[in-house]
Structure formats: C-alpha cells, structure tokens
Length: 328
Image 1: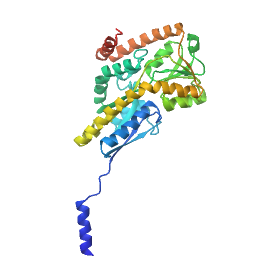
Image 2 (image 1 turned 135 degrees about the vertical axis):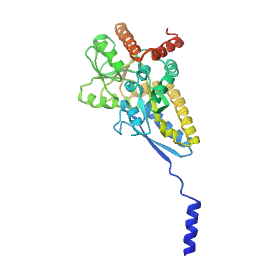
Image 3 (image 1 turned 90 degrees about the horizontal axis):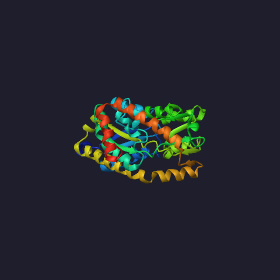
Image 4 (image 1 turned 90 degrees about the vertical axis):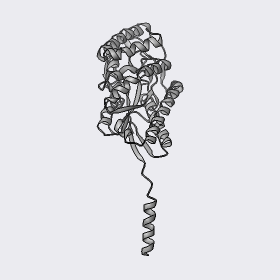
C-alpha cells in the first residue's frame, strides 16, 4: 500500500493539475445585443480561442456591476475590474479627447466616423496611458437621432422638450436649440422615462437599447447628430503580467474585434430600422430647414467651445480630420 501511495504522489508531481484559466470580468452599461455588447461578446470568444482557453473573459451587461460609462476608466485604474467597455463621450472628465467622436454633425457617415477614429486613436491611447491603461478596441454606434412621442422636425417640436443627452456637448447643443436637456447615462435614463420626467432621448437606440426605448417613445427622428464610439480599455499592469504569447493573443483578439465591429456597422442601421418598424416605431428621415439651421448654429458654438477646452494639440486633430475628409 505504501508503495502505491508513493507512486501516486510521484505521478501528481510529474503531472500537475492543469492551470486554471485567467478570468476577467469586463463590464458595459449596455445590453448584450447593443453594439457595445456585441463587441465584448466577440472579444471574449476571440480571445478564448486565440489564447487556447488560457484567458476567459466574462462580459457583464446592463451596468450589472453598478458601473456606468463615466466610471469605467476609474474602475480599471483602481483595480476594481481588469478591463471595461465605456461609451467614449462619457469619459470627457478623464480627457476632452473622448468627446471627439460625438461632436455634432462632424462625422455622420461610416467612412467619416472611421477616418475620425484613425486620426484620433493616438490621442485616445495617450490619454489612457496616463491612466496606466491601453486601448483594446473601439466600437462605432449608428448615427444618433431623437426618440420621442412625436416626430421632431421643427424648432417648436424641440422647445422645452425634456430630453436625455449623453455628454456635455450634446447637452449644450440641445439646450441652445431650445430643449430642456438632461445629461444621463443610458442606464439612468430608463427610470426617468418610466416616471415621465424625461420625454425624449438622444440615442441611436441600437439593438437591445432600442427595444427598451420603443416601449415609451414610438417615434424616431433621424437627425444624424453623430456616430459616437465606445472603447474597451485594459489595465497596463494586467497585460504586462502575461507571458509574451498571451500578450500577443490579447493584441490579436482586440484587432480582430475592432475589424468585426466596423464591418458589423455596415449593415446594422438597416437591421435596426427593420426591427424598429416591426415594433411600431415611426421613423422620420427629414427635418425642416429651420430646425437644421438651428442645429447648425448650436453645433458650431459647441465645437468651438470643445476646441478651446481641449487645447491646440487636440484641436489640431480636428483640423486634420476636416482636411482629410474635405471639410476644411
């Protein structure tokens, strides 16, 4: 018996139990079927495959961990989570550069949004590096419009309207246009819709987010306000602690996820509109000239204010985008 025990112990030493996979829980405030949720899910699947199962990512959707987008970079920096996916404009307190993708009526087509991201990515990386983080990938959202109880096509429709906006710039633009704008995360907007204190929402209403909005707001006006980004960020010390092959797996999975997200956006708007119409949403695709002119004036003031806040270096990014997009 003693010889048998010794032999078994020798086998355990020679063949240790398989190492447990590295486990990351990564939060987003959006539903699994929204663009940001799709991105996290794709990254989790891709990284598991690229790492041979040695890294397992568990996405946490719908702000289930109590974290809103504005909290994400701080939570990663503090070690509460190793990584997170945040709606970029909500991170403006971290750095003004995160507002760029949501500047009004600047980049409103997919090629323009992609060009703006390419021009701005080095600045995103620099801002995150100051927080000991790296940019994993970005997710584009379909163009933002206005969800409301009726179409919003003239200045009178907007006057005094209690509307949820998603960053400081959109809050100022809608306020200057006559609305009673309120800056809220998507998660915080839903209770306000239920109690009636918010009567409209600036959002693409993508995926699961749209399904929740149409329960309260049956009209969507396509104003093409902006195509903002969500970004996934990872704490630098977490990736630095990985062996070289797993660091490469993270890099490869992030690059593949970003490619997937920009490909996905190509058909997303058509799919969203079909789903919205099937659920009784009336989509209005044109606004009156008076409202368009009002938005243009409000947007120009907001962009000038951002440029002054951001400083010369980041304002130069805006100039470079306009030059390359033929908008200078």
